[in-house]
Image 1 (cartoon, rainbow, N blue to C red):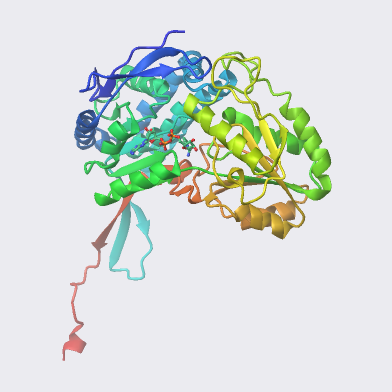
Image 2: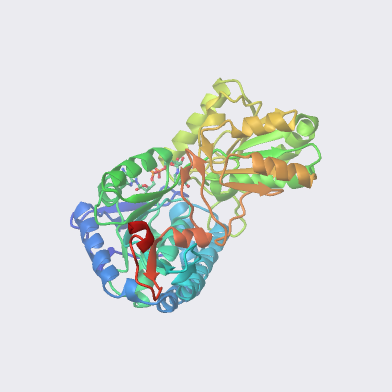
Amino acid sequence: MGVPHRELYIDGAWVAPASNGRIDVISPATGDVVGSIPRGGAADVNQAVQAATKAFCGPWSKYSGHQRAAYLRKIAEKVKERKNDLAQLESLDNGKPISEAEWDIDDVAGCFEYYADLAEKLDESQDSPVPLPMEEFKTVLRREPLGPVGLISAWNYPMLIATWKVAPALAAGCTVVLKPSEMASLTCLEMAAIADEVQLPPGVLNVVTGLGVEAGAPLSGHPGVAKISFTGSTATGQRIAEAAAKNGVQTCMELGGKSCLIVFNDANIEDAVEWACFGCFWTNGQICSATSRLLVHEDIADAFYARLKQRAETIKIADPLQADTRLGPVISSAQLEKIMGFIKDTKDEGATLLTGGKRPEHLSRGYFVEPTVFINVKPEMRLWREEVFGPVLASATFCTEEEAIAIANGSQYGLAAAVISADAERCKRVAAAMETGIVWINCSQPCFCQAPWGGKKASGYGRELGTYGLDSYLSVKQVTSYVSKERWDWYPVESKL
Ligand code: TXE
């Protein structure tokens, strides 16, 4: 499969970066260079923000929601037409199994369609009245797009995470400068190609690829954007929020996680093991919401761990482009090293390795790691506290519901949590007690563009997706009219006497 040679997409045109530089694209499955992306920098970002500003003032923010929706629907159509090649490109670039990349591309199309629907509804809900206590006045609300926005995205769901930001931003009437992760930018450049094909007006979507410090930093510190939406690590998120705050620019932060799955003793072990594996090993373990901490009730721990070991050892690790592969490589050699460092430290700290813990022997190239499970992991161990972003599951046992809740909440992160139990009332109680933005009951990881997504604590703030996602790209203006026939009298006559 050929990797398209693309330039930056600015103001409706493909342009070489000012630096003329390029960044190698490395296949995580082989370590081979398979293409390159443009190495954008501050001058390119500046041009892109100018183009987005012009397009915002020009056609885009003036269009009706229906007009914008028509473009979003055309983008969704093209994504569907190109599903196979986009999924292959995603799998090649990021290493995720092709079956998962195909889901992602379906979700990209679905997300553009969903926000097309919401853009149309925006027309109907414009100028909605606000009930007031004085009948002399009438207030209506106008919901207006924020302006040109900067979107900085991550590599684990390259096209999908970008879409979670681009689709609601465009639906709201904002224009966009997208800075994808340098680790996997290919499908975001194809998003630009699709925008070009459907003749999205120039400057409405600009894509500037490049390194975080060279292209991301100038975007997050640019005074010309109205908002920065970021998905990535907590440390980078803090830097971006600081840079944006200096210009009074608002931010939405979707950061790391260390989510906990709690399995009670009335759970069906077979089902719970399946969710435990899916919840941590899906997307090669590189998911912000991965339930990478697993609490198992002590009554069922032996049976549960025996089945978990068996199941983890049947997960097929192979070339991600093969249809039946379930675990591909992690994104880079640096990420592989980081994961192997966690595995070594956890062994040294005295946890028990249940399965995995090394690179698979049958794969001599690429950045593969076996699905790895540690049990008897203590809360003070690094593996329990820090995000690994790889197929490594940390498990411990618990005795009471209160204890499980306290351990699950005892994390700096607060993105997601999951509970598995046959007792619906208990699930409801635990869900209410979790200090997270997302809770799954009797499952782990389902994600729908209709439902809000985001976390608490070090996992960030703000919400993407659902109607919250659209609202986050809108500002609300109150328009208040005096509607009484009587002259407004500052002081009623009697009180002047
Ligand atoms: O993330 P970064 P990296 C976590 C995960 C992973 C770790 C490091 O634990 O191991 O982060 O991954 C851009 N100003 N997550 O290095 O640095 C960068 O170019 C502006 C969790 O990839 O956060 C990319 O586009 N932008 C996560 C984006 O920020 C900057 C998904 C993310 O990069 C910048 C990915 C700067 N100074 C990793 N520095 C999740 N929440 O899902 C970098 N960038």
